[in-house]
Image 1 (cartoon, helix red, strand yellow):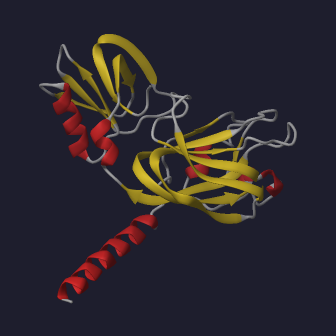
Image 2 (cartoon, rainbow, N blue to C red; image 1 turned 180 degrees about the horizontal axis):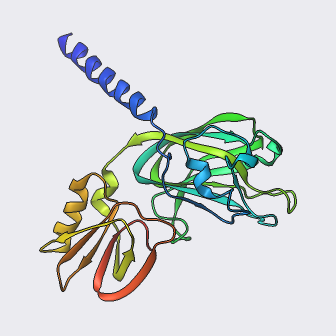
Length: 251
Protein backbone atom coordinates (compact mmCIF):
# COMPACT_ATOMS: atom_id res chain seq x y z
CA UNK A 1 0.00 0.00 0.00
CA UNK A 2 2.87 2.36 0.82
CA UNK A 3 4.29 1.72 -2.66
CA UNK A 4 0.92 2.61 -4.21
CA UNK A 5 0.79 5.92 -2.36
CA UNK A 6 4.38 6.63 -3.37
CA UNK A 7 3.52 6.12 -7.05
CA UNK A 8 0.42 8.30 -6.70
CA UNK A 9 2.58 11.05 -5.23
CA UNK A 10 5.01 10.80 -8.15
CA UNK A 11 2.18 10.93 -10.69
CA UNK A 12 0.67 13.97 -8.99
CA UNK A 13 4.02 15.77 -9.11
CA UNK A 14 4.37 14.94 -12.82
CA UNK A 15 0.78 16.05 -13.47
CA UNK A 16 1.27 19.44 -11.86
CA UNK A 17 4.62 19.90 -13.62
CA UNK A 18 2.91 19.24 -16.95
CA UNK A 19 0.11 21.67 -16.13
CA UNK A 20 2.66 24.29 -15.19
CA UNK A 21 4.52 23.83 -18.47
CA UNK A 22 1.28 23.98 -20.44
CA UNK A 23 0.53 27.33 -18.84
CA UNK A 24 3.47 28.92 -20.71
CA UNK A 25 2.89 30.33 -24.17
CA UNK A 26 5.77 28.74 -26.06
CA UNK A 27 5.29 30.94 -29.13
CA UNK A 28 5.53 34.36 -27.44
CA UNK A 29 8.13 36.59 -29.14
CA UNK A 30 9.68 33.67 -31.01
CA UNK A 31 10.84 33.89 -34.66
CA UNK A 32 7.88 33.78 -37.02
CA UNK A 33 7.30 34.18 -40.74
CA UNK A 34 4.54 33.65 -43.27
CA UNK A 35 3.92 32.98 -46.95
CA UNK A 36 3.40 36.66 -47.82
CA UNK A 37 2.98 40.01 -46.05
CA UNK A 38 0.46 42.60 -47.17
CA UNK A 39 1.94 45.63 -45.39
CA UNK A 40 4.62 46.64 -42.88
CA UNK A 41 2.04 46.84 -40.07
CA UNK A 42 0.81 43.27 -40.67
CA UNK A 43 4.03 41.26 -40.26
CA UNK A 44 4.43 37.79 -38.77
CA UNK A 45 5.90 39.15 -35.52
CA UNK A 46 2.46 40.62 -34.72
CA UNK A 47 1.11 37.08 -34.42
CA UNK A 48 3.45 36.16 -31.57
CA UNK A 49 3.82 39.56 -29.89
CA UNK A 50 2.19 38.38 -26.66
CA UNK A 51 -0.61 40.90 -27.06
CA UNK A 52 -4.32 40.17 -27.18
CA UNK A 53 -5.24 43.21 -29.24
CA UNK A 54 -7.48 42.34 -32.20
CA UNK A 55 -7.55 45.54 -34.25
CA UNK A 56 -5.59 45.30 -37.48
CA UNK A 57 -5.69 49.08 -37.87
CA UNK A 58 -3.56 49.34 -34.71
CA UNK A 59 -0.98 46.86 -35.95
CA UNK A 60 -2.24 43.96 -33.83
CA UNK A 61 -2.62 41.36 -36.58
CA UNK A 62 -0.95 39.45 -39.40
CA UNK A 63 -2.28 39.74 -42.95
CA UNK A 64 -1.10 37.87 -46.04
CA UNK A 65 -1.25 39.41 -49.50
CA UNK A 66 -4.40 39.43 -51.58
CA UNK A 67 -4.15 36.61 -54.09
CA UNK A 68 -2.03 34.33 -51.87
CA UNK A 69 -4.00 31.17 -52.60
CA UNK A 70 -2.23 28.90 -50.12
CA UNK A 71 -1.36 31.14 -47.16
CA UNK A 72 0.52 29.89 -44.09
CA UNK A 73 2.16 31.13 -40.88
CA UNK A 74 5.09 29.46 -39.05
CA UNK A 75 6.52 30.01 -35.58
CA UNK A 76 9.81 28.50 -34.37
CA UNK A 77 9.47 27.45 -30.73
CA UNK A 78 13.29 27.33 -30.42
CA UNK A 79 13.09 23.98 -28.69
CA UNK A 80 11.52 20.55 -28.94
CA UNK A 81 8.08 20.20 -27.39
CA UNK A 82 5.13 17.88 -27.23
CA UNK A 83 2.49 20.34 -28.41
CA UNK A 84 -0.94 19.89 -26.83
CA UNK A 85 -3.02 22.88 -27.89
CA UNK A 86 -2.97 26.13 -29.84
CA UNK A 87 -5.01 29.22 -28.99
CA UNK A 88 -5.81 31.66 -31.79
CA UNK A 89 -7.17 35.20 -31.44
CA UNK A 90 -9.17 36.21 -34.49
CA UNK A 91 -9.30 39.69 -35.94
CA UNK A 92 -11.95 41.72 -34.12
CA UNK A 93 -12.38 44.94 -36.10
CA UNK A 94 -13.65 43.15 -39.22
CA UNK A 95 -13.34 40.14 -41.49
CA UNK A 96 -13.50 37.42 -38.84
CA UNK A 97 -15.00 35.06 -41.41
CA UNK A 98 -11.59 34.75 -43.06
CA UNK A 99 -10.61 32.32 -40.32
CA UNK A 100 -11.99 29.07 -41.62
CA UNK A 101 -10.91 25.58 -42.66
CA UNK A 102 -7.26 25.51 -41.66
CA UNK A 103 -4.67 22.94 -40.62
CA UNK A 104 -2.24 23.15 -37.68
CA UNK A 105 0.92 21.16 -38.33
CA UNK A 106 3.92 20.48 -36.09
CA UNK A 107 7.32 19.96 -37.75
CA UNK A 108 10.59 18.69 -36.30
CA UNK A 109 12.54 20.31 -39.16
CA UNK A 110 12.09 23.80 -40.59
CA UNK A 111 9.25 23.48 -43.15
CA UNK A 112 10.46 26.53 -45.09
CA UNK A 113 14.07 25.39 -45.52
CA UNK A 114 13.07 21.70 -45.78
CA UNK A 115 9.74 21.70 -47.67
CA UNK A 116 9.83 17.91 -48.13
CA UNK A 117 10.30 17.23 -44.42
CA UNK A 118 7.61 15.19 -42.71
CA UNK A 119 5.17 16.71 -40.25
CA UNK A 120 2.52 15.55 -37.81
CA UNK A 121 -0.98 17.05 -37.78
CA UNK A 122 -2.22 18.71 -34.62
CA UNK A 123 -5.69 19.56 -35.92
CA UNK A 124 -7.62 19.83 -39.15
CA UNK A 125 -10.10 22.58 -38.28
CA UNK A 126 -13.24 22.74 -40.39
CA UNK A 127 -15.86 25.47 -40.39
CA UNK A 128 -15.74 29.13 -39.44
CA UNK A 129 -13.61 30.16 -36.48
CA UNK A 130 -14.87 32.21 -33.54
CA UNK A 131 -13.29 35.28 -31.98
CA UNK A 132 -11.00 33.28 -29.65
CA UNK A 133 -10.67 29.52 -29.62
CA UNK A 134 -8.42 26.99 -27.97
CA UNK A 135 -7.69 24.29 -30.55
CA UNK A 136 -6.76 21.03 -28.84
CA UNK A 137 -4.57 18.66 -30.85
CA UNK A 138 -6.09 15.29 -31.66
CA UNK A 139 -3.07 13.90 -29.81
CA UNK A 140 0.11 15.51 -28.45
CA UNK A 141 2.47 16.23 -31.37
CA UNK A 142 6.25 16.39 -31.10
CA UNK A 143 8.26 19.10 -32.85
CA UNK A 144 9.82 22.55 -32.92
CA UNK A 145 8.00 24.42 -35.71
CA UNK A 146 4.24 25.05 -35.67
CA UNK A 147 2.60 25.91 -38.98
CA UNK A 148 -0.94 27.17 -39.45
CA UNK A 149 -1.91 26.60 -43.08
CA UNK A 150 -5.08 27.61 -44.89
CA UNK A 151 -5.28 25.21 -47.87
CA UNK A 152 -8.72 26.32 -49.02
CA UNK A 153 -9.42 29.93 -49.98
CA UNK A 154 -12.70 31.18 -51.40
CA UNK A 155 -11.27 34.00 -53.54
CA UNK A 156 -8.28 36.35 -53.78
CA UNK A 157 -9.56 38.38 -50.82
CA UNK A 158 -9.77 35.34 -48.55
CA UNK A 159 -6.41 35.93 -46.87
CA UNK A 160 -4.84 34.49 -43.73
CA UNK A 161 -5.63 37.10 -41.11
CA UNK A 162 -5.43 36.68 -37.31
CA UNK A 163 -3.95 38.59 -34.37
CA UNK A 164 -2.26 36.17 -31.99
CA UNK A 165 -1.24 32.51 -31.96
CA UNK A 166 -0.30 30.85 -28.68
CA UNK A 167 1.23 27.37 -28.40
CA UNK A 168 1.13 25.21 -25.27
CA UNK A 169 2.99 21.99 -24.57
CA UNK A 170 5.67 20.19 -22.61
CA UNK A 171 9.41 20.53 -23.13
CA UNK A 172 11.48 17.50 -24.10
CA UNK A 173 15.21 17.04 -24.70
CA UNK A 174 14.75 13.93 -26.84
CA UNK A 175 15.60 15.47 -30.21
CA UNK A 176 18.78 17.09 -28.89
CA UNK A 177 20.44 13.68 -29.09
CA UNK A 178 19.79 13.22 -32.80
CA UNK A 179 20.59 16.46 -34.63
CA UNK A 180 20.74 15.71 -38.36
CA UNK A 181 23.93 16.74 -40.19
CA UNK A 182 24.48 18.89 -43.28
CA UNK A 183 28.04 18.61 -44.60
CA UNK A 184 29.99 21.53 -46.12
CA UNK A 185 27.31 23.85 -44.78
CA UNK A 186 27.06 26.64 -42.21
CA UNK A 187 23.99 28.56 -41.05
CA UNK A 188 25.05 32.21 -40.79
CA UNK A 189 23.16 33.74 -37.88
CA UNK A 190 23.54 36.89 -35.81
CA UNK A 191 22.93 35.01 -32.56
CA UNK A 192 25.98 32.77 -32.31
CA UNK A 193 28.18 31.91 -29.34
CA UNK A 194 31.61 30.74 -30.48
CA UNK A 195 34.01 28.51 -28.59
CA UNK A 196 36.56 25.78 -29.28
CA UNK A 197 35.74 22.08 -29.40
CA UNK A 198 38.13 19.20 -30.03
CA UNK A 199 35.55 17.36 -32.11
CA UNK A 200 32.13 17.83 -33.63
CA UNK A 201 30.75 15.49 -30.98
CA UNK A 202 31.98 17.74 -28.18
CA UNK A 203 30.56 20.75 -30.05
CA UNK A 204 27.12 19.15 -30.12
CA UNK A 205 27.52 18.28 -26.43
CA UNK A 206 28.14 21.95 -25.67
CA UNK A 207 24.87 22.74 -27.41
CA UNK A 208 23.00 20.10 -25.44
CA UNK A 209 24.38 21.34 -22.13
CA UNK A 210 23.74 25.02 -22.81
CA UNK A 211 19.97 24.72 -22.46
CA UNK A 212 19.42 27.48 -25.03
CA UNK A 213 20.89 26.06 -28.23
CA UNK A 214 19.04 24.62 -31.23
CA UNK A 215 21.94 23.77 -33.54
CA UNK A 216 25.68 24.10 -34.16
CA UNK A 217 28.20 24.92 -36.86
CA UNK A 218 31.53 23.13 -36.50
CA UNK A 219 34.74 23.91 -38.39
CA UNK A 220 36.91 20.80 -38.60
CA UNK A 221 40.00 22.83 -39.52
CA UNK A 222 39.96 25.54 -36.85
CA UNK A 223 37.88 23.53 -34.35
CA UNK A 224 35.57 26.49 -33.96
CA UNK A 225 32.23 25.55 -32.43
CA UNK A 226 29.34 27.94 -33.08
CA UNK A 227 26.23 27.48 -30.94
CA UNK A 228 23.04 28.70 -32.65
CA UNK A 229 20.70 30.27 -30.11
CA UNK A 230 18.00 31.97 -32.18
CA UNK A 231 17.97 31.29 -35.92
CA UNK A 232 15.89 33.80 -37.84
CA UNK A 233 14.09 33.51 -41.21
CA UNK A 234 16.53 36.02 -42.68
CA UNK A 235 19.61 33.92 -41.83
CA UNK A 236 21.67 32.80 -44.80
CA UNK A 237 23.49 29.57 -45.64
CA UNK A 238 27.19 29.43 -46.47
CA UNK A 239 28.76 26.54 -48.39
CA UNK A 240 32.24 25.74 -47.12
CA UNK A 241 34.02 22.33 -47.08
CA UNK A 242 35.45 22.96 -43.60
CA UNK A 243 32.06 23.47 -41.92
CA UNK A 244 29.43 20.98 -40.77
CA UNK A 245 25.99 21.95 -39.56
CA UNK A 246 23.96 19.98 -37.00
CA UNK A 247 20.36 20.90 -36.34
CA UNK A 248 16.82 21.04 -37.71
CA UNK A 249 16.98 24.29 -39.67
CA UNK A 250 18.57 22.83 -42.80
CA UNK A 251 17.97 19.68 -44.85
